[in-house]
Image (cartoon, rainbow, N blue to C red; front, side):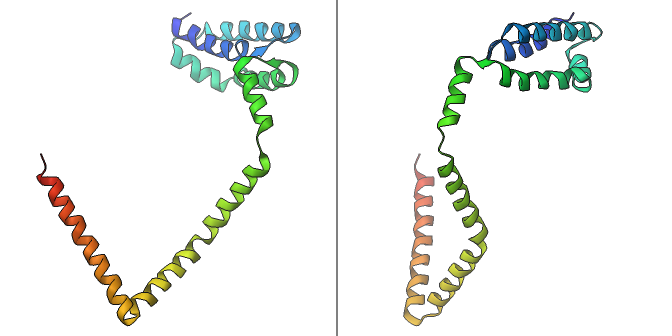
Length: 155
């Protein structure tokens, strides 16, 4: 069997053995599954061929199904256990509140933009105030040009 195919299979093995404390029944099931995967891999010429055929085979779906069983029958190890604990501690009310606020802002963005533009037009049409706004914007624009020109001359 090709070395890269072995590595591909070993990555799949480690995603199970490194993250779950397997009971005897699951350990036997996982070992039997990987024996069938290794038999399947013997007919593949290289890792690309293996991955393509594996994804199209029932073994791929069975692999995903193993994780469902592992999650319900075995306890997680180390980092995965810490992630599960952190997930339990999350404040879902706060998450929901933040999501709703985001959705409301997103939904009202066009209306708020139109209101801002209308207010800007009204301010610009006010006799003295409009002139002051225009003068400030012109001053700011020339200030940017002057800074850019000075920045370009600095070496």
